[in-house]
Image (cartoon, rainbow, N blue to C red):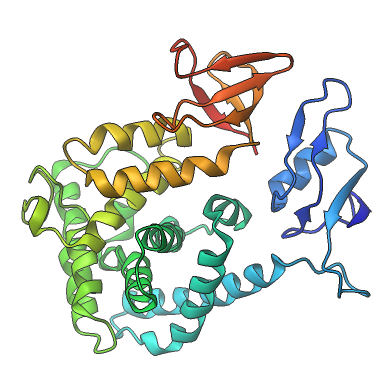
Length: 346
């Protein structure tokens, strides 16, 4: 461990101990949190002077923590992926061999860490929503594949399917893709073409399998047959597409957009649970919710009442309705339906 001044703390460092509010005793940031710019800015504003940072024992001269390698690998992965998206926008073929090694490195980092939410919070968001969303879905899909017991070969294909699921959007005019408001029916029909356009782009790439192409083509299909582009249902939808559908919805709804604010991850998870009875695959939705909810234990959240508290327990039967500790009182969201989690602070 190392006690650093707040000015010495860098993005990517990991807390070795909880950061507490000296007045109330509430946990501001839990031990193990991967620090990002927002965390550090918040701590500075709260007047925190020193924090305990985890440092590798073999690092004598530099404060390099074991998450920094993820940051470096992610930046390299993002840079190479962005080049592929840019080339596709200008009509060039996808050259995926350029990112093969970085995909493997990212898969290794994601699957061995388990806490995908900490990884996502660590990442600096890109101005290009479609690109950033594709990276997020790639990582979320990889974790679901791990939870489902996928082989390394299957995991790599699923990662690439998540990465390229929206690649067809580079062929849709920017004024439609980034329109800050509701789309007209004609504009929405144009956007819906991205699934077929993406399928064609991937299909033309010898390095990518049909599994990846079907992930892009079918990720807006729904279990009840009310999706697009073909309106197929349940057993006709490729499992990659079913996984991507869950990740796509979760990331889109929990991300700040030009035309809408982000929603609470817990409210989104509840929506995914409800949708699993009609539009989303129930097995995949359940695996996702049960596993991702575990990462919120110890996090500081804001309730619908405006109160701030810490999640201390997740109910197995309803993981989206945990027990929250506020000062010296406990609120069980499973039994007290007056409350819901409005936001995850850290």
